[in-house]
Image 1 (tube, rainbow, N blue to C red):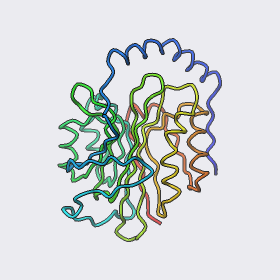
Image 2: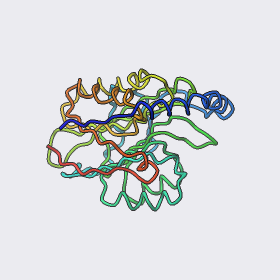
Image 3: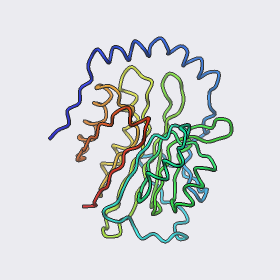
Image 4: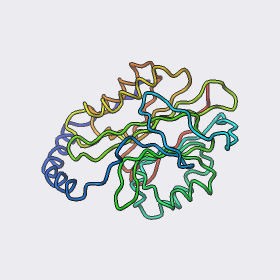
Length: 268
């Protein structure tokens, strides 16, 4: 059964009417408080190893010999959450609760703070962070955490067309305990402040190229900012065109405020 999601035209017009008057203020705020972007694409791991290779080319993760990887179990559990720079009250307690038993975490808008790295360490996660920008000496971006270390990684960084704030994404691969075909996991924070879906489509392109060359299972996760039918259409057909079995879960907006989505998957 194909998912069928509609966005009433009246609601869409209301969104545009609300957003357009705010654009000058958003632009001015971006100029006044513009974060400091990295000079180059910079992905780093919990061992402070750096990876500069943009997707769609994966680079081997360094120093994996120090970590004994048993591979992902089957089934495994994935949690995805836009963590909103850890600004919500009790984010640490909720993250601890929701990740009980999780094997993989894909987080967006991550503030790379000592609290976040401590959470990763005490819960036995390896992690990869794609450096989007630095604000008040703290790095922000997407972060993928895993109970088993990644085998390879690449990333991208794209600027919001109007406010120029960078958005990042990560692709990483993981071996399975009972399969020779690795998992490709993509964690993307979608470009948001646009009137067309073209920038979002361009942001997806390196990952679609990577998907074409991958022979194992694939999970495309993240916050796509697909708040309109036009933007949603930029995501779903693109994945279908590269022969991905596409399963769409429409998350109610209130869930973004309350918590993440969690899925349990069996490798096939």
